[in-house]
Image (tube, rainbow, N blue to C red; front, side, top):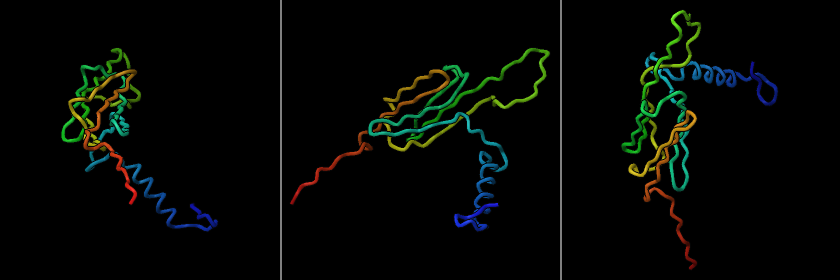
Length: 144
């Protein structure tokens, strides 16, 4: 039961809690088909660059493809299934396998041809320099 700040029961707090739980339950589903959120991404921006990091543990560089088109970054590849010993019995499978693709709209226009990427310790880092027109410009104020 949820209580408001003045210690009275709040039906709206109960409804908000129920909505959060329902959103969490159905997050990642589209038309009844489970949609993967692999790889997990972070997108950062500053005055000079957009930086995207992606968690891709166990991937090989030659299994990845990165593209930037129309201000969208796409990361795609294939995670191969592990082959356990012939006499092994699987008790739990949580690590997804197969082809994947994540596309993210970038917060600023970028210089596609100047993008760089590195893969280290299972983390892909893509640095995309901001297009000059998208960089913040300081405007001088003249006194009258």
